[in-house]
Image (cartoon, rainbow, N blue to C red; front, top):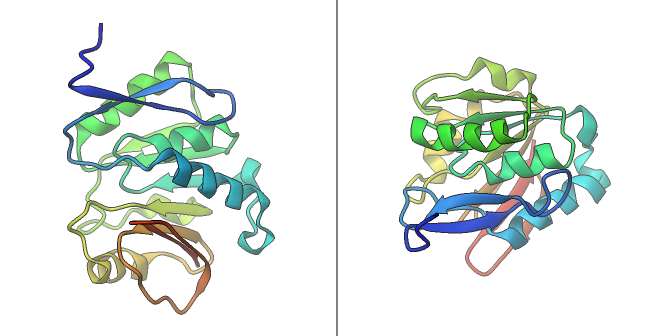
Length: 183
């Protein structure tokens, strides 16, 4: 039995894993992407022609995976493959445990610090989701990560602040979050 004081539940919104529960530690060093934001992301990816994404052919990298909710949702909705990266192995172990329960095979797990190491596998991706920890500034992300990514890859950046981007395709604002879609 799960101690409900230590864990919260997130549910997969749609697709083959719809309704499946992802356990999230109540006090953790990551912030799960809210259900409404996850739903908006996938609706935009599936229905916005400006983003030019063929979901069935997409390899997505969830660069700061945390709970893995973005990548799990993407797999549930039929992306070709998801690369889950988190510097904390305990996070990726939980993601892998979830995926193994359902015999999912279209994923890869890596534990690389994207600020210190170039992730060569990113070049094979069509979509990269970046939701870094709270204290990571946009300048750090830009200088250490974004400047190393090919300009043909669609990037979704979740950030607490409003930022200016030259190559912005779409921006979605929430009460205390912002989503930026750009190449």
